[in-house]
Length: 395
Image (tube, rainbow, N blue to C red; front, side):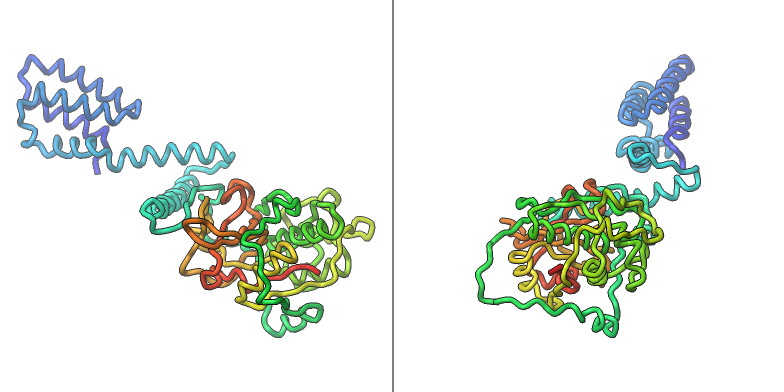
């Protein structure tokens, strides 16, 4: 396929066939103008200059040249060339902003992933404009990752039923009064019980961040003090109980650990995003619990009651869809979620005037993801993405 640069040369030669001998030098000047336009990336001006030359020298015979026709088509709609130039500019801005560096082969591979994700976000946002979906998407620092690389972050590992019975020795399903009237909206952030959003990085430690965040809120309610607790403490020190460090884990296992040993503050056991030898000491353990309660799987009313009456609740959701990966705003609703694979924290609920009921969910992918690090997920919509299928909270 000819590039615009090649077509510009061929097109001016085609025009020369129509021009009289005395106009050849003028056509050379026009070719120089074409070349300048191309180097500056001004495809619109290139098309305009060509049309002017065609009008002056072509004598209306452009239909006789397929080269002229192809050049006109490519410059008129800017087609493939402008799209590629736009992509390359956006990609360069993206890697520069994030400080990423790739060799040429890797760069082309990553740019292709970036382009695929960009097209997907554009399709969803177009549907939003048409009123077909209730959320928007935007590219973020995950936009150049393969699916396999991204899935490392989804570190919820649900135990089998045999293991689950053992883990429930210190737990029972949450009991509540179904007839009790609950507030129409709850947001524990406004009550000072939620710490800032953090970023787990390239470690499947979502379960540790969600558990630490739930314990932070629990401690705030018990003592009035909001502390930043250590997800790294949970990553390093719950492996003997069945969790797998950066390869994933289960929130109730972390609650069990907290009840036995206590969790350190972030400042005393800082996050590094890799597995380390457990460095827990009794002297740095500041927060414990008395076990945990679980929500009956699938019972969104129980989850609502727990969030309203007990505080933020850790929940397991399906976070593998690309639409979730690039969620930006609105009420997230996905009709084809997979199994629960990502741990997050439900910190409240409410109702959107246009899109209906939602959960307020704190993620651990940094504040550039979603709405300042949060997702508003559809509530009372058939247990959307399994939000009530693996939910628990400390007691």
